[in-house]
Length: 134
Image (cartoon, rainbow, N blue to C red; front, side, top):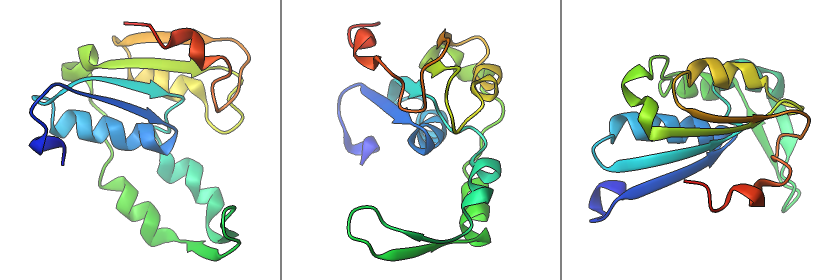
């Protein structure tokens, strides 16, 4: 779908969506102009390991199971060397993120534009302040 778009593509990814956005930016770097990452999960195989088991869907009360196969699938999308893509990314991170360690993202995205705030949370409190950021 991204490849069929005939204009510059901008991605925004938060949490696990940030992980996928990193992957898409690297494999489609000629198409993706810029990617904004909001408290991205850069090591989801570690952080989501604690979610293994059955969980309830918040929207329809159905159940799903998160298992080791899902973690293996995520590993296929892992990117650890982003130095050739540093101009593609902008990181928005808050140190108060209760789910992820902000330092993992700041280290992975070293050299990229970064806005790191004290406090906050995983949903990035006050994100609307950056809607006009370039």
